[in-house]
Length: 270
Image 1: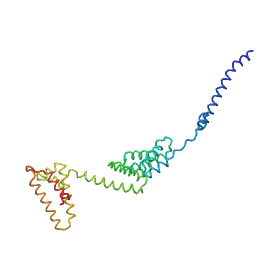
Image 2 (image 1 turned 60 degrees about the vertical axis):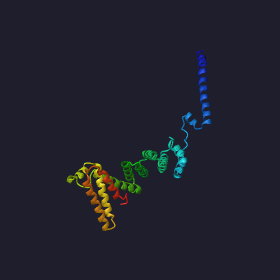
Image 3 (image 1 turned 30 degrees about the horizontal axis):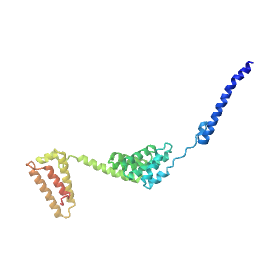
Image 4 (image 1 turned 30 degrees about the vertical axis):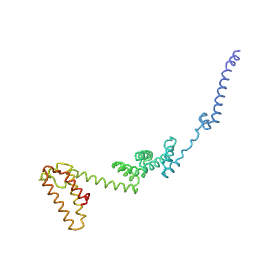
């Protein structure tokens, strides 16, 4: 009697378990009909294959310089978290080059920088970003990128040319800084009041040096000995008038030096 009673008590439990199993099977069948890939997840199998992101539309639009098409096409690739790394790098480089051609410098630098974080072996991209830094007049960053390109590819022609040009530019800037605030003569030997005034003022010292350099240039370019003689006399006259007039009421040394520099540079047809 006890066994039969126990069997009657277990019967509702068994029926309930079969009922829940039927529900799970029905749910799986519905998912497989509506979302074929979902059945794998529902049954613990391998996830369905995800469709690959197509980078071709982005690359072709960028190569054709079509901003209208490249914008959304490249964004679809770049903003998709499922994009494979190689395709993401290609899209970033292509869009960066397109943005650079349209003078959107900051956005181009951002794309190049992201591409280099993903793949720091791209010499072309380092060189391209260096050229963008130059457009922003950031010479230290430009030199750094050109150098990085050459470390990756010592024979990179554009990077070599850019790095060499920057080296000359930095040398020129260094030379200018070395003589900044120094006149054409030695201040230790300055005796005249006008010379002491020039030595005491950086702007006047720079003007004096520029006048001296401009005069040396026009002498080198003189077409005859007679012309060179006239040019030397004109400079001597300027110095004599400057020395004699300095300190007198109404005399403006800075203006006199600026006028002389303009004449030497041909602004007044000298």
